[in-house]
Image (cartoon, rainbow, N blue to C red; front, side, top):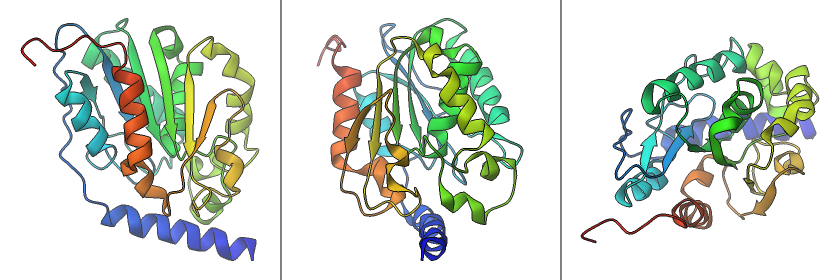
Length: 234
């Protein structure tokens, strides 16, 4: 039964992801008044156009500079470290090597973000990390897809264990993990619970819908914009 659920979860996640509409992404955010910068890290089989369109555009409307790179290969078959290195290079190119940022990662993107923060020095410039439907302890559904990235997504993989050992490098960075008890892509369900994070459970019925769920979008927007000054003329 567990194996059957894992297969169904993986298939439903792939199909639903392709059906979720997206808003156009911008590889070049506009920084207004030198204020907040947010980086979005997409999940497996996705790209910068598909993840976080609603939240991204709401933040941009408030003057936040947003960057949503497309990491390749999207299925991480060469490993998540390679994607994290691309992420670092893109952030440095987009915002410079030292400017402060916050990161929002979806599913596998949350682990790629953690590798960047914990292993590539990104923690020194990060104000907050938000992970959405991220399997912090791995997921059984990755058994049914090949490649290094899928292997790294397995529970207790060397990659997962290495991230657990180095999480103290996050220092005092605020971390929030959003998860759904109905997510059939993340198995077991409590893999989204991370002791280092503030864990928030949201009753969303499908994995890819988490990035457009009102409670998730509203909460991340509120947290990121809490310290912003009003845009002149608004």
